Amino acid sequence: SITILCGLCILLFFNFIPVHAQNSGLSGGDSSEASGADPFSEGESLFRSNQPEKAVPFLEKALADPKTPPAVYNYLGTAYIQTENLKKALDIFLRGTKAAGTDKKSLYYNAGNTAFLLGDYAQALEYFSFSLAADSLWAASYLNRANTQVYLEKYTEAINDYTQYLALLPDAPQAPEIKRMIGALNDELALREREERRKAEEAERIRLEEERLQAERERIEAEKARFAAEQERIAAEKAAAEAERRRKILEEVSAALQTGSST
Image 1 (cartoon, rainbow, N blue to C red):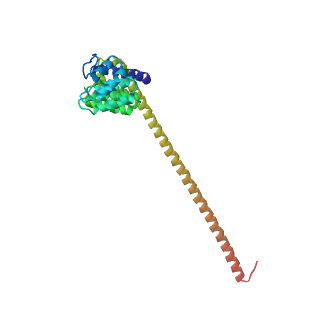
Image 2: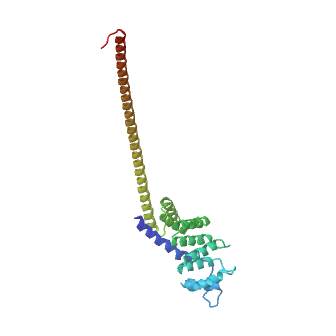
Image 3: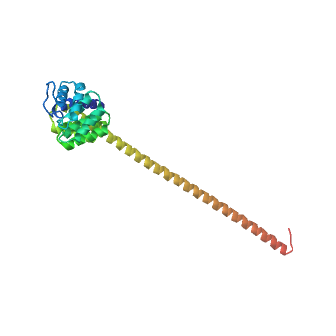
């Protein structure tokens, strides 16, 4: 069930990218359709008309101009994602986080999305956390950080982030799926807890069994040692008795010889 729900959440994860592009990260200025506009306006216009390939050169040129609106980083990075140039996209988003006046929460959010697409879930988790450090009330980062934590099998942390997301957006369209995911994760945690308890009980059983076996080994060794000691004692007594018998015989022979008798 977690696999199915994880797939649902990943769909939700990617649904946030276009929503964010329109509402959060790409709000740096008004679009201009006029021919001959400055590179940023031209790139923005092409981007908004769903022509990211054509928008990239204008946005790259605009990035070199210090007067370009800070939103250029989100436009260009997202255009790189749409043209499947993920490493460049990540670089642009991260460069944007170091620039003055940029929307840090959205840049780190987009960096987290890009790292996730690259399969670097640990790094994605870090970027989503930076996004929430910039704005602790931004629901999108809670959702995507939770999705990332599911991939990292940090289920308790994922539940906390999903819960926080629902607290911020209780009427979100994806709320039913998220609640199902929380239920599945709780079931998985309960299963793991039972498994850990079973393993602990099995380890304790093995430990006690080994203690009993060791005690039995020691008992048997002690019994062998006592038996060997008893055999040595018996052998020593026999040897002493035989020596005494020979001594008496020699004494008797010696006494007989002294009286002149012989046998």
